Amino acid sequence: QLAAFLLSLEAPGSQEQEQVVYLTAVGGAPFVDYLAGFLRQAAAVRLPGLVIACMDQEAYARCEAEALKYGGGRVFCAAQLEGHVVLVKHALIPVLLSAGVDTVWIDFD
Image 1 (cartoon, rainbow, N blue to C red):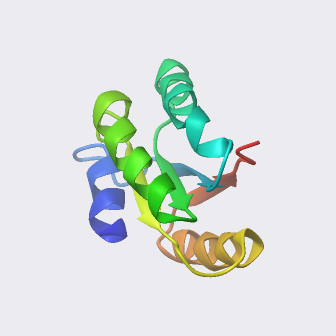
Image 2 (cartoon, rainbow, N blue to C red):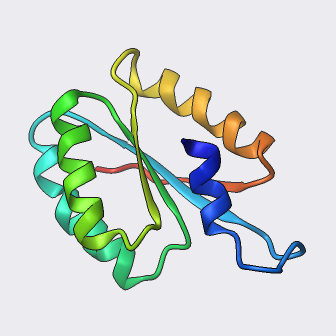
């Protein structure tokens, strides 16, 4: 699913343009309550792509719902229900870099 999301972000017919994705992680109270605002702001500043590692089921459900409202197809909610945020961060960054995507980590808090 992540690979399909990354392909959907590419500009049609443009193979030379750099692809940038922003990556963050969210889970637990009170952070899930800020997902809607975070996604609204991401849309306002026109982030080219945003991957949100959701650390629990509530975060994943809220991310999916809010991404439909504010994501415009530019947000991927990844269910990362096991492991510490540091482990998830250091697992996802190399995956994105290996796909040829410049990756920027944003601390959600």
